[in-house]
Amino acid sequence: MNGTALIMICYTITLLDQIIPKMPASTEPRAFAHHDHEVCATSALDAARRACIARGLKLTPVREKVLNILLESHAALGAYDILEKLALEGFRSQPPVAYRALDFLVEHGFVHKIERLNAFIACTHSGEGHSPAFMICKRCSQVAEAMSVPISTTLSKAAKAIGFSIDKTVLEAEGMCPRCRQDDTP
Ligand SMILES: [Zn+2]
Ligand SMILES: [Zn+2]
Ligand SMILES: [Zn+2]
Image (cartoon, rainbow, N blue to C red; front, side, top):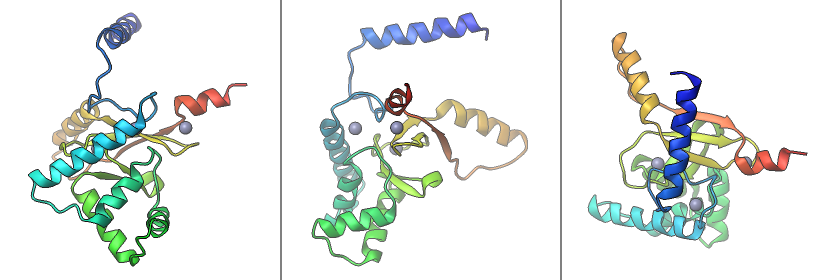
């Protein structure tokens, strides 16, 4: 594809963006865009609650609290930070309880582990089966989650060609978010 075609596509996407009213589309990476985070957090929690009911899973108070802590912002939090916040909010549970709650949330896709930071974020497409790609801001630790379909497909093809079977793909890109880039401009 040449440069002009690429610009045309970008232009079309921008136009579409302006025409189609902003919906809380679940596939849209929201973290770095201006958005009402309260609505974003509430809908993610609702989606997790509904998914638990539909899948016969139990969202215990400690599991819900851990998810709520991660939904406070789009910044990734380490397990130790989560433990501290849990204790502050009156959940003086033993670390294993918090770790088990985290494991549950990760296993069922309500929370993602960011390997690069050894930290966690709440999923913004809760309940859907997906293999996301993460964009990590190295300054503010905010993480945006994008659907990784095109990259995953390319990788799957490459793997298939050499007879390799992929169990898990981790896609993490590190850089600077729009806000931090702006702060950086003199
Ligand atoms: Zn948000
Ligand atoms: Zn997700
Ligand atoms: Zn940032």
